[in-house]
Amino acid sequence: MRVEIDRAACDGIFACLVHDDRFAEDEAGLATVDPDAAGVVDVERTEERVIATFEGDADAAALAERACPPGAITVREDVTAQSTDAAREGDA
Image 1 (cartoon, rainbow, N blue to C red):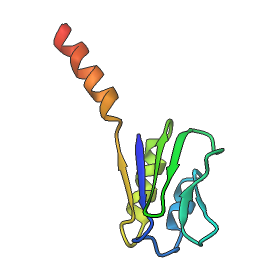
Image 2: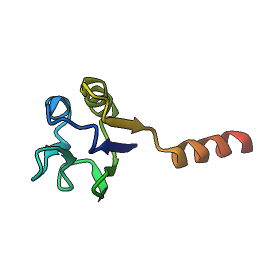
Image 3: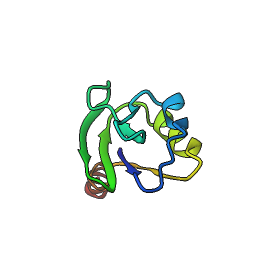
């Protein structure tokens, strides 16, 4: 799954950390993703966004997204995996 954090929208409440330990606090006091956490495949950081790829517990990531009061977190299923699955179904 792809996880995005809008750093401008994040207000440092850290409700996400309570629901998914792949999230962490960064040096600016905003939410980020711990690149060393289990299930974190990749993390890209800019001043505006944190974009990460997670494997594993989708429910925890979805809870973190819903718990974020300003809506700074977006969780999307991996579109590539969906496309591959759809292609396989079309071959059947």
